[in-house]
Length: 530
Image (tube, rainbow, N blue to C red):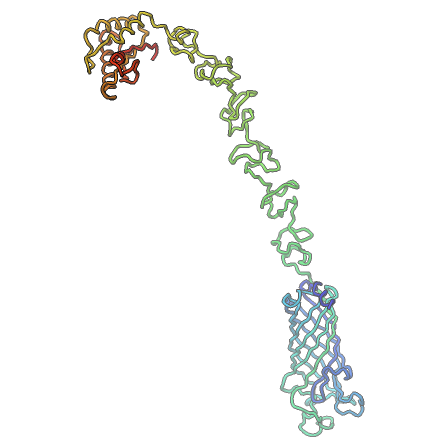
């Protein structure tokens, strides 16, 4: 049992050596009218020798040709060879074409194991040679001539591979002849009581039908042929670790495609055949470039560069101005060398005045001065009054620092405008100016003409009598009436505007008569710039 189990795991490799030649030693056995010598080992040994040639068709089938020549006979009384009559001896030549069905085909036993049981079926012929003078064992041939008989050998056997090229084999074959004229040793062929040619008595156990014979065949088998190379790469399948290599691909000693640079991609597939050792490659053998910037990872010092960004030789985003901010992020790509920049690549402007520090001669300018500094970063003073524009409410008109850069309104003008608050009166519910207000308006017109830098907004205000829209319209119309009067008196019209505010800007309570009177007023607001 141990031998049987072990033999299942020893490859015979018969597929590698397709041809085999066998040297056969045979024990022939007779079964016919004289008796049955099948498996009767008391019979005299009738040996023959022969040759066989076989070809490996598949793991299941072998096709072969075999031929044997040697002694053939039978003796009924093996204890008294002289007295027995029912005996004969002669020579026989047989040959057949056969096919073996092997059980070591992967279905019953492991493929190509050392132990190979098989079944055999063939077709061939047997020739029996006449020996009329032989005594005491004549060879009896029907009709007195040499005869060729058709045979069908059927049997089973067992082959054991000692090595891949050498095996020993035993098989038993039982040969069925044709059923026409094959009873070549029949003593009753004459149909009488005596044999026609030898005069011997008729065989007592004579029976119709052909003679048959068996063969115990022991063989020494030699396997030969070229080792199988399925992919034709020059390395036999037995040793080929890559048995499916494409045709004409150069392989190494193991039958695998050559990989010169050792990157795991065979040369015939490798589009980058000289990749340095240890470098990770893609399916076509080229170094992996994870960020797709054209610089392989093993050379890329900036492996996570965004897609489509221009990079230098080491895979880092180009920084044309060398400020440390890559061009694709740099909003100020031409910053001079050595200038400190922010995250967007623009020169730092610490005081936020719009002039970079490296150009700013007034680095502490308040943020409110943004846009109101000169090219050196210093606050502008357009009107030259000593008050910088970002603080100057009249940046184009020279004024006083105490008045936020605007000229001081003369005292007499302020007094006149104060008088006008209640001095200009209108018809009730209308925009018509009452005539007693004209002298005051004439004085105001003269003041404005004498002070051409004054810009005036005439503001109309009402109390809360009436609705909101009503008072807005009334205050607009009254302010417009005053403006028109002043323009008629010679004030340039582009220096004076009007606006009604209704009761939105009260100066007293509208719950009293006196308060309402104070809220009904006309104000003159002086500015110096539009």
